[in-house]
Length: 480
Image: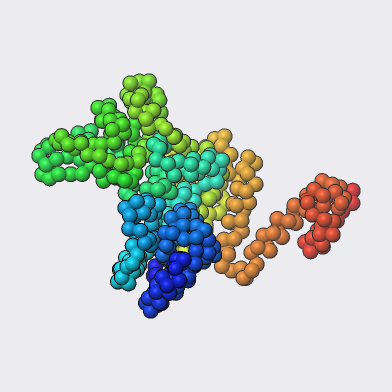
């Protein structure tokens, strides 16, 4: 992110001339403004890497202009110049977001030093921006959490609302529904992006070790503690700590977690020093925590502290319309990872997949796809490739009479386009539209007893367009 274009705003012509000459000799493109209003207009109309502003100018002062820059062009770095070397001016300039502050008269070496510092800052900012974007791309909700069912749309909306704040989130759902993916989506779409995301499974660590895993331990705190160890809270400082399967946490540890949430500090096992931590908590469970509260197996005060914003993930059997999209996602991913041509599912295979109960939810579906890709030698997966998945009695698979039109069309299109590599360039769009339009127009004509005026009104097109389509699509007109 190199430094190339600079704006200098000063009502003194001599100062503008000196700075312009000095900066142009360094190879920079320099624009000059005689007052604050002109500078603001130029900033709004152009892209600058740095603005050097006089603090006192007609129309808009340098400080007021700085405020507007922070509102409109946050990425623009601003250096304030003043002839009054007062502490008030310096403090005010930095408080309002100036990158630096210099006092007139100044040596041009000072400007050179500032330019170097700005260039380094922009380079670092560019690297950070790139890293943040890479992280955001990797964990974007739409790339990792798949589904467009009403239940999933509600999840997306909730993630968007809570991500920008620091409220505690409780993700609830059966095993395999993607609770950690939701936790990551909350973190990587929040202001804590670029800071640690630390996960710990409270059910996978023995009770006697869980405390030191969470809070850390001092050397000699227990047998085997040969050195100081930072706990998950300290590791996640300024970031997000994901407490998976929080419902399995022992009651005594629940009390300590509650204290950390209240006091925002931890004490390592074997230590007596309180260590401040700034951590956002996202907890998850596959259990009914309220029922555990009633049974005195989970602290009520901790439950309400965690359950500030609940996100409920429905099991896959309750959002079957998402299965075709999930199947395609996993097929693409697994085939890419295995470096084999992408395989497709036949209608028969999709019927098997959408009719299964999926007790293991999305994780079980992913494993089923992976197993089929590995074992099948064919490009088209059939029902036999998923022979171990029995349909559930009374459950209509996606693509049945209860499925949405979009799901039915999705399944049919995937089957029709499995030979996509054999199609000519530019064929697909017109081919699909033709096959959808022909039956649509024929059905409407039949329902209107072949009255083209009524049919055109229902379709929302004019009569001439309808006539043209009837001719182009080869629809045979009938008379009742």
